[in-house]
Picture 1 (cartoon, rainbow, N blue to C red):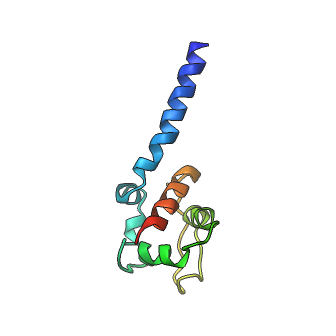
Picture 2 (picture 1 turned 120 degrees about the vertical axis):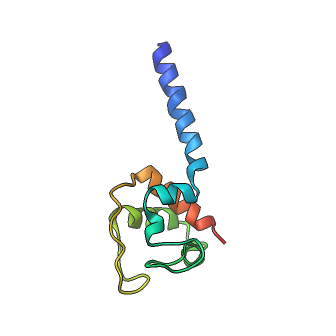
Picture 3 (picture 1 turned 90 degrees about the vertical axis):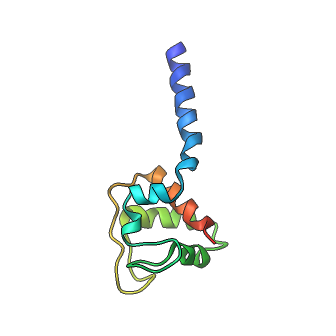
Length: 103
């Protein structure tokens, strides 16, 4: 029984700590910064431009998380965004939520 409680406590601690990782370090670790920058276009759009485009869209986190995982094309021009196999669903949502906070 104690083991179950301990595992639950660890899962809760991990889940609540993940947003702290939502910063440029996570984006760097997951290779997002190879094609994006916070304040300027590189290969893909600047994160601040993504935040402006999706401002007020209540489904933006899910949309962007899906694009991070599966890739996409046509939204920002002819260069497609490749899928990122290094990112799981939870990390994709954290990254998307972080991008949306950039001003």
